[in-house]
Image (tube, rainbow, N blue to C red):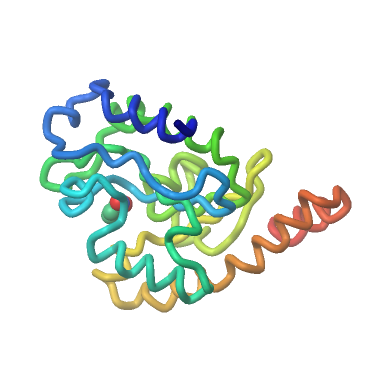
Length: 200
Ligand code: URA
C-alpha cells in the first residue's frame, strides 16, 4: 500500500470535528504521489461528498478546462482541499474545523513535496498568507520555504462572477513558466537567486 493510500485510510476514520457526522464520504484528495503541482481548494461540495473525490461538480469541470489550457489532465496533478468533509449546506468552514483538518493536508504536502502549491480561493490562501487579499496577490508566485506558492481565485468564483473568468484563465496560463523557473531553481542554486528576484 502506498503512503498516500495509508493516509487516506486514516483520514476516512477521522472524527476530529463535527463534520464527520454529516458526511456521506470523506474527500481526502487525489493525484500522483510525485505530482509537481498541488491544487488546494476549500471544501467538498455536494457532488464531492457523494463521490468521495475532489472537484467533480461544476467548479471541477471548469478546473479541468483550465488544466487542459496548459496541456495537463487532472490525473497529472494533485488536487486536495483545506477541509476533507463537506460542511452542511456548503456553509463556510469554521476556524475549529480548519484547525482540526490541518494535519491531513500537512501530511499530504510532506509526502508529495510538490514544486508549486496553487491555492484556489481564500481558505487555502489563508494557510500561507493569512493577512493578504486574493484580489491583490492572485497570479503572483512567492517562495515559501522550499516550495513556490501561487494564489489563484477559486474556479467557483469565476462561475458566479463572469468578470473573474478571464483573470483566472490568465493566471493559469502563467503556471508552466513558473514551473520551469521552479525546476531550474532546484537544479542550480544560482537560478534560485534569480527566481527569488523574478517572483518577489
Ligand atoms: N470546491 C472546492 O473547494 N473543492 C471541491 O472539491 C469542490 C468544490
